[in-house]
Length: 493
Length: 121
Image (cartoon, rainbow over the protein chains, first blue to last red):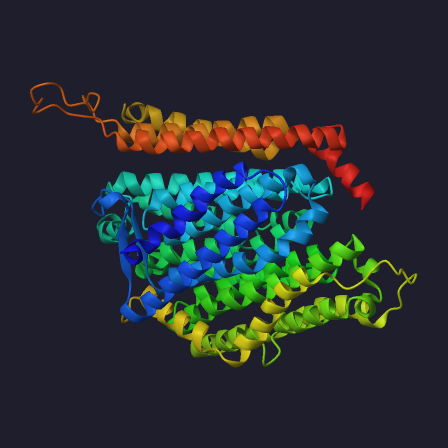
């Protein structure tokens, strides 16, 4: 009975939990409540992924209104997998949040912080699950508005300007998406994605549809920080509270990538996106440029969180490179990298959160000799950093391996060489942190700095272990992403 | 006069570009928010325009049927009601941030804020 309403519950629970959280007041209650909700959502999304893997895609009509008229939730392997990633990161980050938020956010704002977090979670899950184009916009704004608020809670006054810049860029992006959806509606009279996919081919030569595509893709690219539309990302991630950075870096841009997959492949269709509009060379050039420019900039950062944020822009490049191949193998690599990058970047940002908790800074110069004082935290950083480089036996290796295989399958060997070269850049920026932490002597032997508390180490190690585990036993992510890629390309089902 | 028939769309494009330009070109944070508002408003107008049916009335069924009556499409209006709410929320959040930026930096001019940030880092 309840099982039939899984998709609705997944959204309704965190959405209703948010105002309840506000009523719980100060103290640990708000935190306990949002942790409970995160884990509940994680359980539900796990059930849904199992359901799609066993019995295939299913849909849910909200309020019993039939599909093209009412809002419909459509669940297939792709979005069930993305939902699982979002929910899992939320569930892992929340136990960590207690100590970190106590240190970084003023006490009277804790309740508001957890409320914003729940709304953001709702928004991200909603974007992913919905089958209605306008609903995507609504959920997108729910998640964006709450993340602007969370970013602004950072201690540094730069968090305010970073949040403001993100607000301007994010709103421009969302408004572009709104224009795109409006033009689609104007030409087809429908907002349901499956219905749009059926009706768009008949009008695909018209200029409004092309304009709709252009507006939509640029809007989404802003949201997913595709180079050169990434300018909001480094500061927003660098100055936000550590928990927010870890959560958003692992989920927010990934969900936007999902929206891009959905509209490029399912709604507009492959032939329109790549034959009528030359999306392939655009994505290829931008993603390669993004990989190199962002990795190079990352090397010269002095703030580790900022360094990791630039690395995120580069990793988005790898994800989009997989899309530009337009093959099942390319998409599989792309989806796999979404998963692995979420796990690795989550771990790296959690490690930096632990450092910030103890040291009060994440400047590389303040990290000298930190490995002696916080051996467990820095060990996790090294392991997750190896994943970022793509060393064998880590998740990062698996997704790069699939990406390079897919590139070679298309016969683009120069691109494969570039991907390998770009991994060297990752070696440099990860090494800079490792060098400071392990091989430089600390300025003064500050006895104050100790290992981070257990409540922070356990979530950190869960993600670190996952990044190694999924480098060895790849069955779950590989099965889900292959299946998802096949569904996107319309092969099998 | 074909282009006059698309009067609304010309207004939409004019407002859209004026707003977009203001967001990009102005250094004053309040002016940026105003530009963003104009930009969003142009999209509201776009949606409302597309819902209009020539000779159509309000989509309310009068007593006793009302067959043969043309109605304007109500869906874009409803959609844009949601977008207006989003716009209000974005504006208020933006203004709240500006208040706090002013408290922290003592200015709301982008270049002056940039100068202060460069000095501190």
